[in-house]
Amino acid sequence: MLKYYAFKIAGFSLSRLPRKAAYFGARLVADFGYTFFPAMGAGVADNMRHVLGVNADDAEIKRAVRRVLRNVAKNYFDLIKLPRMRLDEIESLITVHGWQHLEEAMDKKRGVILVTSHMGSFDIAAQIFAIRSIKTTVLVETLKPPALLNHVTALRESHGVSFMPGQAGTLESLMRSLHRGEAILIACDRDITGNGIKSVFFGDETKLPTVAVKIAMRTGAIVVPIFNRREENGRYVIQVAPAVDILTSGNDAVAKNVVRVAEVMEQHIRQCPEQWITTSSIWAKGAE
Image (cartoon, rainbow, N blue to C red; front, top):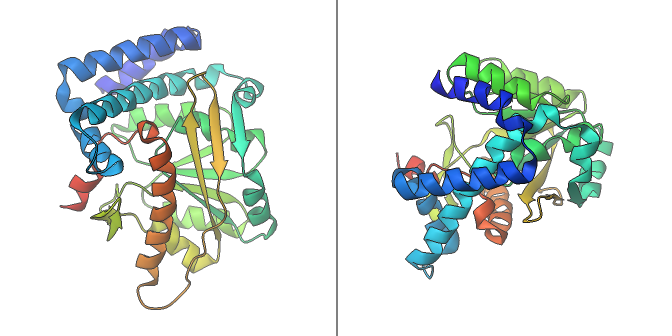
């Protein structure tokens, strides 16, 4: 319950700060944690070694870890600040590229599965769907205790975007959304359920989730990659990529589709590794 109360207290205090002041504080907190609690960055360091490659030295990896932790801290502030921000204010901070790829997919009335990775400011970027009137359900990790899950969900849904934790009945609800021609968004860079399959990601084998591609194969929904990043000037950039060509049948079709999504994620993560805010090692999970 400690994390729940921390969110509540922050909502009454830090959420009232101007963004620049809060981001400065977030940076200080992240640097303090990096310096005095090195275990906080261990998973991030392993992820950065894979993304940056064998030629990256220790100093480069340490710089990347510090930047990732700073972005994580900023994201917590973005989340608690979200209900106090107006949609027009959020819109003024976002630049979007490639939106036509989503519009073209939505026009086909088959439902759209937006695939992404944990990059940038996830909760702020998701508000683009409310801003542009795209009925969207975002699949998220189930948090514990339930009070924390309910509180975080309420923050995220404060402007009308639906967030659904992965639990019993979720799959059926997502399928109904697609049948109505709506969109669902699924992060595909972490196997949080343990039901993923072994795949190659940044050159090494790990487990990646299959839920997005399996739903697409079953429903005929169109798979569209979407990513976001945080700019140094406090703005956010959303990039929508062309639809992924999904195999509907054949030997190892699921595995091949997972690889196709993974390749797109790799391209975008490599462009700004410090924006990949996954703090646990992707490959440690894959080795279990």
